[in-house]
Image (cartoon, rainbow, N blue to C red; front, side):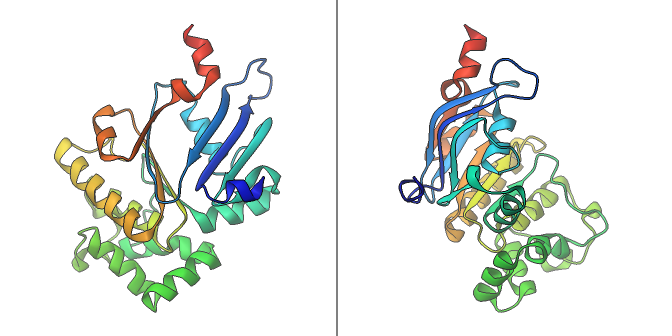
Length: 240
């Protein structure tokens, strides 16, 4: 099974998940396959299972049944500690609220994954020679000027904080980037600029992208658009 999943950035097969005490599953997905380098847009209403799905792909949750592989690694067979290490090494996150560390500077926030994952650190060093240079190159490409790099993130605009979060997710070239409603706090112009920069950086890094949003108007920028109500048989049952 591992060999057949190795060609995919994400491979879910026959996955069901139920919260403790619930008789019916909240997630029932026959297949979800994302190819390396693919840009996937995922939409769905509240309660359709988006957050649960992201938790499973990230290895934070474990399925009741079925298989989950990311970059060929079978998460459903790993211990919790092994999933934590794998997540730190191979999955980058951009959260809706950014989750930046307020007392650290812009560049210090970007470097956090390299301090937590030896693999991310080693890849960043191979690419740029030093961790600071790796962070600086990302910040420059995301159009964040050097005069901001030592500034505490609390003194940045919302759009600047979002691009810092993107740089943090991308440093050390993780196999998969998960962006959970990252553009919801931006106006249309800043949203479009951010999305263009993010897609370009994912292409340069060779990272697959799973982008979750309620904003259906963004779907055209992605190679694949999916809806939770089509993927999740449990959500389909709720609407019938």
